Image 1 (cartoon, rainbow, N blue to C red):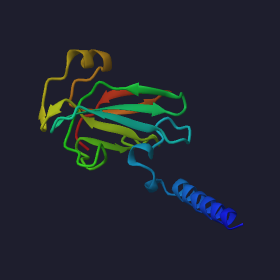
Image 2 (image 1 turned 60 degrees about the horizontal axis):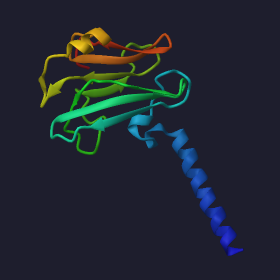
Image 3 (image 1 turned 180 degrees about the vertical axis):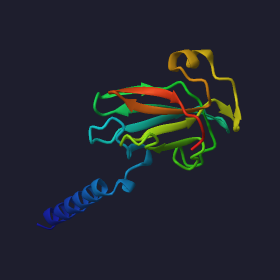
Image 4 (image 1 turned 120 degrees about the horizontal axis):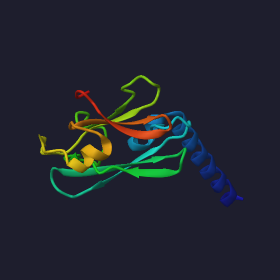
Length: 152
């Protein structure tokens, strides 16, 4: 009897935690708080890190609507103390920049210790970008990368 009461207490606590997480998005990990593809399900940004003091992170975006992950070649300057997060908004930031109701990912790409490095020709051709400031945007049911004219 006591064992069953403990199990029930644990289940109630777990259910309470799950409900509170679903009500308050700030309880979710930052990289999983956003719905980029407008299906009312949070999508996930994953990242890899090269291990250098200032370089480099690369991100991928998992979209729940298509159950696919798109990995981007762009290198993002390092220096994140607790892992890739929103602590350096001049380098990485998520918000609805174009006021379409969906968030975009702002990135400052291809810098080392804050200094710009030439944008590889392959990136320029594949993504039609020319600057170190870009947005990753979900538009017309697909991901697009566009130059962003200024820092946010």
